[in-house]
Length: 336
Image (tube, rainbow, N blue to C red):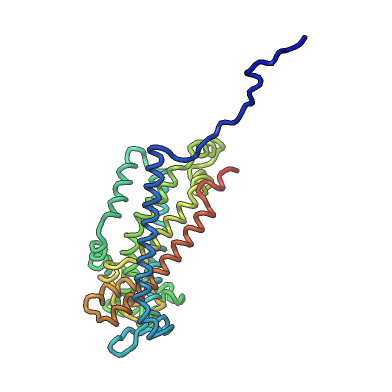
C-alpha cells in the first residue's frame, strides 16, 4: 500500500527563534538600573581621582614619610599620618568587635525567636537606630557612656593588662579613683559610640538574609529531632553566611569613616598608640573635620591626602568583602 505524502509532512519543523532582548517595561528597568550603576561608578571614581589629584603636592613634598611620620605639625614642616591610621583602624576594629556579636544575636532573635506579633516593632526599632544622627551618638557617648566606659577600661587594664592591647603604661589600675581620667577620651570609648552606629546596619543585612532561609529546610531539621538552636546552627547560619560577611564588612566601612561621634569623644593625639584603653587617639575623618576649617592650601592638600588614604582603605575593605561574599553565597552548605 502506497502512502501519499501530504503538504504538512513535507514542511520541515524549524525551532522558533527566541529573543532575549528586553522589551517594554523590562527594557526601561534594565537601562534604568544600568544608568544608576554607571552613575555610582562614575561618582566613586571621580571622588578617588579628585582626592588623588589634590594629594599629589603633599606626596611629592613629603614622599613616603607622610605615611610613616607620627607628628602633625604643618607649621614646622612635619606632617604624617602613621598614628592617625593606627587610630582609625583601632577605633573601627574595637567597634566591630563590640557590634558584631550584638548585631548577629539581634538578627537571630528577631528572625527566629521573637514572637510574630512583635517582630515588626523590633525591626522598626533597629531601623530607627540607623536614622539617629551621628552627633547624637557622639553626645551620648561623651556625656553618658564615657564615665562608665572609663571604669570598664580600668577593670580591663587591671584584669588583662598583661595583654599589650589592654595595657595603659601611664596609669595604675590600683590608683585612686581620680586616676581613671587616664582612661577617658580613648579609642575604646569612641568605639562604643561607633559600635552603636554600626550595629543597626549590620543587623538589618543579617536579618534580611536569615529571613530568606527556606522554611522547608528549617522544618526538616526540627522534624529530625534538632533543637531550635541546632536548627539555627545547621541551617540558618550556613544559609546566611554571605549576609553575615556582607553586613560585617558594611559596618566596618561605616566605622572607618565615622567623623562627628569620634571627634566629640577622643582627645587628639598623633603618635602611634597600640593601647586602645589609653587616653588620646585620632582618626582620619576626625582629623579632617577638626582641621579643615582653618587649613591653608598646603594643609588642605595634606588633609585630602589623608582622605585619599582612607578612601583606598575603605575601597580595599569593600572589595575584599565582595570577594568573600561571592565565594560564600547564602544558601551554600545547606544541601546536605
